[in-house]
Length: 486
Image 1 (tube, helix red, strand yellow):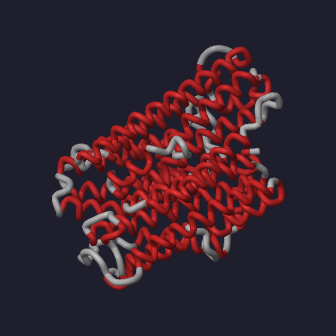
Image 2 (cartoon, rainbow, N blue to C red):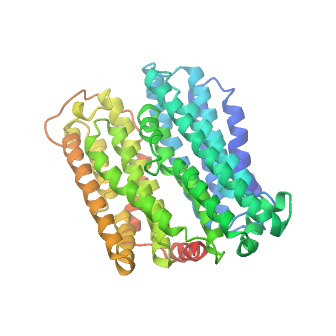
Image 3 (cartoon, rainbow, N blue to C red):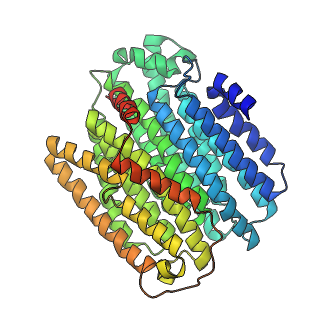
């Protein structure tokens, strides 16, 4: 391990791509579930180490890969949640194998696709070429489509096809927007790969055609907005969460939505340095608010626990996009903090939900009840997760939402009122459903959960700590990112 860490300290940027790519190929050949599960955990752990080393050993930007404060924040968060999800996945998928929902061949495919997804997301985050970034997001989409349909049921295949069709439309719009950015850059930078290199684009963006940039951003917002899950582009997300394996629901909500958000933020930065381009903020604010209010009302109508938290993800991605759309030091800082807190909290909730669904034998809320009595650890874990995601103090999401709302009140009070109304509606829906699931008379089956609770409580502990105290180094880091975003 020491030799491995020494090697990673030399080339950590290569390691965050090389490790998952090689591991995916190996896992596709391994017949033993427990060997594959352990290798999956080990690979994600070593990738996390490599990502952390990038904080201290940042290589110079190349033509295809680069690291700055912005993608450093995303890559550390992504690899951390990927690691904890792989730990949760080991016990969760073992139960699926035990009850016959998955076969050994399915599991080889599952683990190989998990590492392929990690490779694709990491590549999208560290790509210095906007074309390569698009390819990485497309690869991540196709990989998750295959994983959503892994159960091979009618509902799972339908969800996978819906995801594939809507995702393809979104990625096609994003491709057209990317081409338009290249066309805007070509007269200034010249033809060839240089006109797609992010670090070159940001240097010369002030001289690009504002008309082309404006049209490009509209397509990019619609394209990557589909991947983010913004309403009304969200239709694939609830089905994908409900029908796919729960670890993939955790990865979708906690990570993949963030990768699409990252791509959108990169293009927003291009428009910000061009004085004649349109202000991208109002478009993002509008879609963000629509997503918050729409998802808040839809939470009341959910009867499937995973669908309910899928709509919660739409709501919170709307909050994050709204914050980045408002812009400015405080709103950008709060948006970044909210993104990190949402990733940790929502993945913890899905860890709890996955094992709850296994103990109850269903995802229907009506067949759950009295969980704090029948399965106290899972029940109270879910309660703590919902308290966190609802934005109650002293947890981290309260801090980020407070900063977003207060900074919006200072600049646009009417927008702040709409945002607060949406948050309160969503708050009521979550606690209405939580009350029927966690408390009252026990309902449904009450089998023992063969679960690893460690990932869930690690995430919730971090969210609690962030609500009480943020290390100065982290505050400085996020402030630097806020300045980059403009």
